[in-house]
Image (cartoon, rainbow, N blue to C red; front, side, top):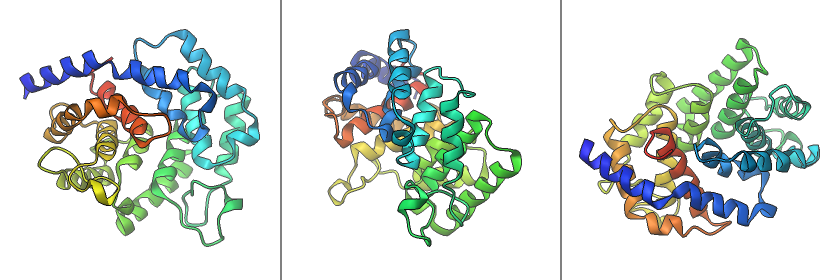
Length: 280
């Protein structure tokens, strides 16, 4: 497997995924949706990230009104996590006010919906992925005590037992990883096993649409991001097989268009590669 990993590293480094992602972000900087600000995260994590790019992200966020940032819960979460990664202060008014608003959007079942409470019905059900996103936000901003954090974890555990995070736990894994949980957590371990068991022989995972049952490029990249976020790495065959499939689809991934699903795949793959040190 070591030789295969070496070949994968050489290919992924040569293809400069982070540079392509940066190019797309800068070309479309006037159109960044707050809900998708995480697209900038691999660039911010890269050793090649310039202070100019980081400052641009900070200026973009600080130029938004509080109403814009609070349009959706996932937008507020994405904004805060990206702001912190770019070097923003967790004690800033922007962060404190936004986190306070997010906490007020909690639903009766103990979690969060991606829409704010004024846009959902009184019997709305929380969703694991955005509840995990809130968990990560609160952990990184030190904005909740242990009891509050544990109550979110209890919701996530209940939701796993009831729905297995709707059968697609990969995005939730990205966020629980950001919150500090890893593959040794019993709940996370179950989600990882579910994904490993559903991996196709070609290394991919079935996509989100009916036409991608033999291997979805977008979903495979998202799953790789989820698995590596909770500590799986190059010693895990599921990850190496997934990267091998992604390598075979690199031309399509690198030709991602702004607003299309493959830019999400490009972000996810770049983030996963950084997390296992295949690129820097």
